[in-house]
Length: 166
Image (cartoon, rainbow, N blue to C red; front, side, top):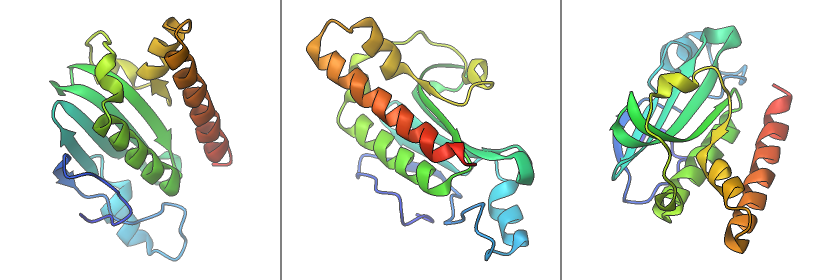
């Protein structure tokens, strides 16, 4: 893989691998390299584990752009179950999210959730989405899900705090 910071199990198949170790805020990296390998790349990384996909792209160009990460279940972008979505310019935060979401899939966290199928295009305007949070809120009476909900809220608060300064 082109990014050594990713910690994926052997269950993940690499479909697209254009996610170089390039921090968009790193001023020591030549702008031409950032343009070629990041700012002009909508498809940076596509990973598959069974019917789960982690899809990372860069959207919005150089100045207003950001990493956008989707975790979805199903093989069709327009007819799948969106599980998670994150948007950030923070390179280290995106690396951490990829590693965390991949480990959640490996542990079967999302196997318990069923979300209605739809198109990823229906969620383009939002920066953060978590199906597991929605399900956990619906099942708030169950102690296991109460703990999961608290963990999700803590993670979302951490995610937002890390990305506020961008």
